[in-house]
Amino acid sequence: MADISPDQDLDLSFLYEIADGSTEFIVESIDMFLQQTPQLLDAIDTALANGNWQEASQAAHKLKPNLGFFGMPISQATIQEVEIECKAGAQDTAGVFEKFNRVKTMVNANLITLKKIKEEKEAEL
Image (tube, rainbow, N blue to C red; front, side):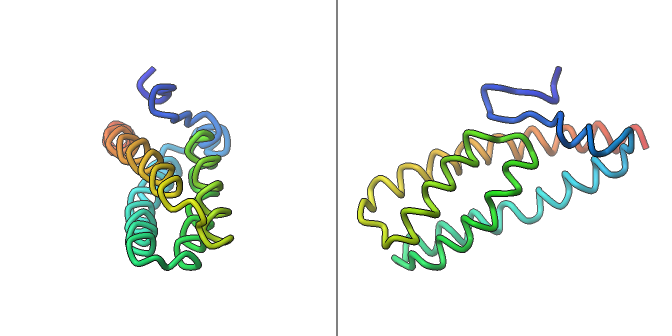
């Protein structure tokens, strides 16, 4: 099924469950995720590049529940590690960057998949 991709850490079963058959809800939810997520990733990226650990921690904290909602537990757990490490002053900066880049790569792949799913669902409306 195109909607679940374990290789990309993406499982939309929770979204479908709470949508209760509403294709419109699914499209709106995906659309909101597609708008907010790149902005949060950019905010984390910029904050890390500037060594602004507090700002990176706050943006990671905002991103974390969105990843859970869209069935990305690996990315969610990893961004939580980034959040915690940044909150503590990012003692292992290389590790923080490595973890964030892993999340960013996986989430960006999911964004492409979600755009396709959104287009398929919009065609059903």
